[in-house]
Amino acid sequence: NESRNHDMLAAACAVGVSCTFSAPIGGVLFSIEVTATYFAVRNYWRGFFSAVCGAFVFRLLAVWVKEEETITALFKTNFRVDFPFDVQEFLAFALIGVVTGFGGALFVYMHRKIVEFNRKHKKIKYFLQKK
Figure (tube, rainbow, N blue to C red):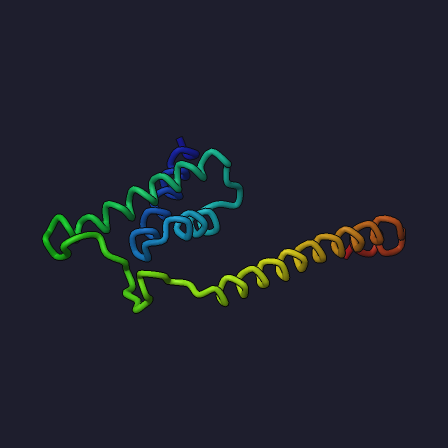
């Protein structure tokens, strides 16, 4: 019973944040971070589904009460609609993707080497276990 109450609390927290900020994924991540020390994987989909439904209904309420003509973006922009990206931007996005991909691979490689180094040296291993 307490487990079910905890799951409901997490889903309610996800719905609240997603409705407030129109960010369902952010709501789920926030609810996991705030409500759980251990979070079951089955609750991710429950929280995400409830957050998406809550945010969608919240945005529809403005249409239903005739405040808005249709569902609109939360924050208005002045971007061109006909072609929103330039070719130079695509090149910059690709370069950022490649650089951060190699940076992530370097991080994983270095972390592996550090862990292997710590496992091989007895004094460092003992120090890290005790301190």
